[in-house]
Length: 415
Image (cartoon, rainbow, N blue to C red; front, side, top):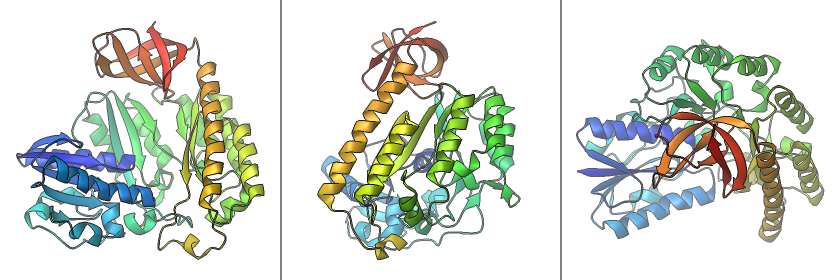
């Protein structure tokens, strides 16, 4: 039987989907990924926004067009949020939330239709993901204790639980990939024996001699000691994705974020003192409850001052069950779109400045694919998508000089 796994949402979902693929493969199924014609499908859903949850439902309709008789298993956050939206679909033979992905074959065979409670006390190990020669995600943590007022994820993923450090290191030792990406729901809260342990984990990973990235961090973990550890590393890729959400203190306070914009800017400046060409990206929610024109203008000015390499911009999406639903003063949808457009222009300017900074600089690129045997594609260590005018092998790490801005990245030549 050919089973396709379809993944929506975050890097944690991507890791867990690769684990699901491996479980299916070990059970004797033929496997593939994405919206292709197959006998059965597993949809690993997302519910971080209303749009993400809607996309999860839309995938079912697309599958029906590909194969009206397909058997479908739906798992993940959108199921945790509202299982009934999937159970009423005749193609869906089983559902599971975020607990149970590690034993998906059992849930499929039992045609499970009830969610398993999330274990809030202990990290649940999963099957190792499908091997790759390029980039491998490594999940180190699950859940979140922060309860930002706009965020539904702590209710869908549960409390913060950390994976055993020895298990993480063992998986990295046995990976075939030439680059790993540490990921989790809130990696900044990664703990060893109950104490914050991300610095210890990074130092141990660095000893293994494999190129590594960190997918997303809260700014509070990037103190002087952490920045020094990363600077001393021989294998760290200087791309910092640091969650922000708003660049105005009044908005940050309503969001229940744990820093001020002044603290955030101080950390960004410290990073740039130590990593001159580091990519620094972030997430911004536009049109949050009660965001006045003055608050928005403060965010605009601070974003221009910080000058990110890239900004992920999300219109505020109210999620049932979060504290923000009790707040007053919704931002009008048209006004929200106007503000989003302004931030997109800032983002375009920031990307262009970052690319121009990197012209004629030397970087190491992990090759992901080759097109027509003429152009090789991959990301630099500081996360610029690169078009190399040469044939290279997938999985190789090559040294290049960046030359010109091109499409969504830059052109490069081999050094």
